[in-house]
Image 1: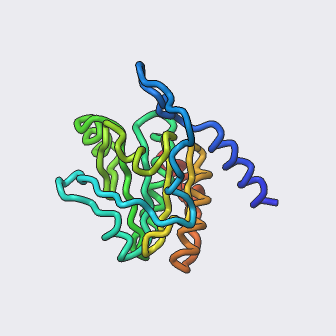
Image 2: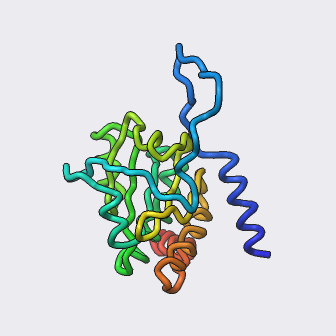
Length: 199
């Protein structure tokens, strides 16, 4: 029953994303014919993807997935994504020692990202992409969208949409623990406990 409720909530999250790219820009017209083939999907190989990280070094997804699973989060600093960040930081902390690499890509200007990262004490890999090229490569317009990629590069899960209560992070936590064959971290419980302690 719990799995059914989680599935229904996740469907609602996907249906009502936190923010999305408007699609066509002013002056652009729709091209008649078939839409481009969807190559970024569950069970398929992740796209070739490189981005300059916060330290100026190039982050190569293919190199990361040679070592273990990677969680790529395409996000921003909006209110919903901001509330959700604590759950993803907790997820990262729970599994980083077991082989997971978390990569957050912010669609924000450099200065804003640096200030935000310092204020949130972000501990995972991150980069910024104000023009949204990463969203095109991963074939999504939804913000945030999370891609869980197995060791070897196959996409295990895609979770699109924002959930400030931590449900998306909880579902992904279960999938990460399955990949790593380890105990599932209860990210929601951990975040709630920290919030109570900080009151």
